[in-house]
Amino acid sequence: MRQVMLIVNPKAGKGNAKANLFTLCNAFCAMEDEVKVFVTQFGNHARQLVEEKAEQFDLLLCCGGDGTWNEVISGLMKVAQKPAVAYLPTGTVNDFASTLKLAKSPGKLMEHLATPTPFACDIGQFNKRYFTYVAAFGLFTEISYSTPQGSKNTFGKAAYFLEGIKQLTHIPRYHIVLETKDMRIEEDCIFGCITNSRYVAGFTSITGEHAKLDDGLFEVLLLRVPNNLLDVQNIITALLKREVNTTWMHFLTTSALTMTCDQAIPWTLDGEDGGSVHCAKIQNHHKAITILL
Image (tube, rainbow, N blue to C red; front, side, top):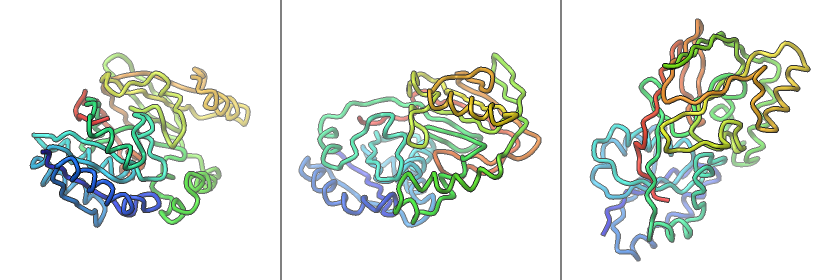
């Protein structure tokens, strides 16, 4: 008999978590597991619940979007005795779930949890915070957390495109210095991302073709500032083909890096506001969390 902690975000995506709740609880009870349900009430509530209570359970199931998943993982990284964790994605994009090909229906998920396969997954640390699949800055990165939830519910992924059009009149640029144990890059950039995922914003990532979530490495992509419309077209073409154009891109893999800038850079972590910082110290925690697939 397992002790199960079920965390539900009823506002994620189109509110499917509420409809899934009975199916999940009924299936756990059929397997003679004991379930305790926690419904999030405010931002960072899931993280708080995990930090305070997760050690009491054998299994933690997160039912929500990428933001809720980030909160759960952030809480687990503070816990000494970590339970195994499972994830039912109910958000708008669900990049992390797509990478691991997780079940997106409660029935299929519960079939998998009857005979689960454990997977030890890397987790990223951004200064004192954590992320599961992406830390990013620059063009369009604010869209994921600035797009109103009502628009996400109505338009789905298209809401992000609509919000992104607003940023085309103001393309940010940052003079950054990126350092790893092996190299130093100083560059003017319009975008950068540190990923542990094959998907970013719902699309196959240029960094993710060969990405592994348990190799202890991040994939890092930087886009230089274009000089004219032809440069912009070359960058877009490379992104669409998922090719690294070395004229306009830096691509590398690393387990740790430090990025500094003379101005505070706004970051997004797993689609949530990561705050603005002059210095970001990013580290890969190798196989830090066990996920049931």
